[in-house]
Image: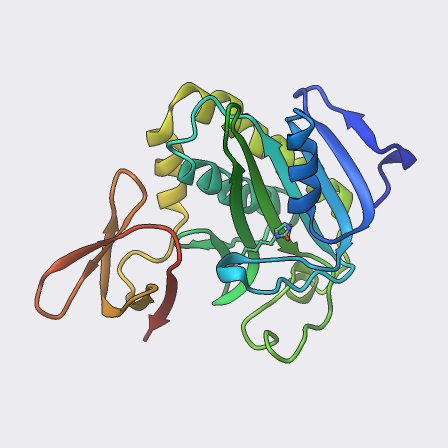
Length: 254
Ligand code: BTN
């Protein structure tokens, strides 16, 4: 990506975008920066050779997508799910504003368009004397095809719009949206406001779903999301189970 050939560009929101042609993973590079004590840095790569998703899954990261990690040193690390929510909102809003495409959030942190995945988010941390968080965002923008394994479940903005999009513009907009939520909501403990916007855009509520956790498979109807962002699943026997974000897969049923 371009960014005037300069590796570090400082924006008025006081974060820097650091661009690379190829990395193993933007999460790894962000972690290197964290180990040097840096933060408020956005690491972007045109391709990743070892892009990773949740559940240690491979994340396909050929040219054409936006692969980035936002490195932060947040005020608190006990509410990190709201950083993931803020990233999902930022992706959704930037897509809506720049392309007019209306996507929805699939709990806990995927962006979908008509049931196909457009964007995934992976939040990881380096915790110690100082705490750092890397919010990794993978957004399919200009790819026109995908590997067989994911081609039926994945889409890109170009496939939807039938147009090539400006990745750099989308990157800037997404970060502008994210840092606004981060500085004005997350770091001011205004979690309820983040949750409210997130819930408004989440289409998981009222769906019949199968939830696969590390230990079990649960089927039921999603009846809501609680104040901490946990999913509330009503089972056939009317029991309500609270499911936390983590190693969980959600599949909708008709
Ligand atoms: C998911 O499983 O849905 C989360 C995918 C997150 C992918 C992004 S791409 C940029 C960053 N670097 C990585 O290696 N992963 C995240």
